[in-house]
Length: 554
Image (cartoon, rainbow, N blue to C red; front, side, top):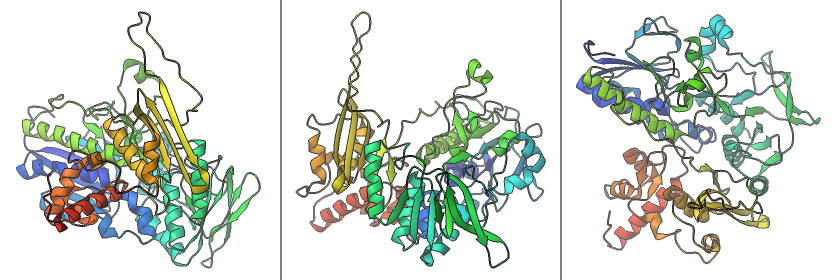
């Protein structure tokens, strides 16, 4: 892009998932104005949908219409070209074109990668793993780009609608699902499938589930809650191999998962939930620098090519210092959360809109987006409430001493840890603070305390001196919601989209009286889905105010 460019800024977007769709929406004004020409390449033959809700879709609690975020038709009405069911197979950086599997070569002035992530396939005897290093991509690039994995019959990973259909078929017959991995997505799928009538067992290596998010106490309470919800849990078992049985069609399909300690866990479906990795194949093949994802600077620009950007789960944001440029392994990685991806999409779209209107790059027109703070992770399941954020592995008896500088002018705030556990009733809370300000917490089986802690964490507010006040929120005599601040107009309800109580109340007053309607009007609840209960509480307050004839101040 330079001052001599004539015509609109040609942008090609590879990826039509939630983050890519948000980027396209944000660029639409520039397309309508004639400053930008946008082409979107979507590998799946469907409109952009919320992948976070794939497990709910598989078990019948979420319809595709409710998951759809942006339709190709709406974007086309804005003048955006959307190619569904198309696969980008090569980036020609010298010629500035993107080659497709059907033979097209799309020219670009700026290329945006929003290719997301793919499920990890663990090392298991009986399951092939495709190599995706440069030699393999150079030899089998088109084949590898067209499919994430070639898994045997009866083995899948919950990443797209096809996977949801595979799980749904087993759920409908009340079959047995073996879930390998005890992360958030695996547990949500396990709980949803068990509630829908499937026989479910979760197998994981280590003593407790969600080890990246929970400490031992929280994990132990969660394990008990899983069993109470009808999910069998097999802990401390490392998966080693997959056994098969003959399929009526003449092939073979999954029969059992075999662990290193000799267990043979039979089932009708093996669901892999072992984390994800960035889909950076195109970047590797194009010679772009890649770490845990496509390496980009704070302005989301590739370390290797200023005409290429990356956003969402494929973007590894890191400052390209001279030292890091020479390091083989660099720290960090993609955030893995939908909220930060959406904010990246919005910022980059605004940056490119200015560049398109000015007919040059003019980098620095916008201040780079701020570094994202860790966001709370919530396990979305009926009857099992888990919320956690930050490092909660610290021991309450590890007292961190106060540290003063040599001049005695500054003393760092001492860390304080509060823990409450009631394993018999499935409740556990740990709070980590510095100078009274919450820096990390985990809450299991305490939904109201979790909601209050989330508000305090996000606002940077101090905890009450008497921490037990928070525990009483989930007591039998507690009335209403957590605090008045939870319903202040400026309080954020949906962290993924930055939607406040005030915006939700305005939308409700305009006639949007269901969570689904609020999502369409404000985008609240269309991300991770963890704010649904909070949206419902705001709607209930609005309805109560209208019913009683009380004015609703916004």
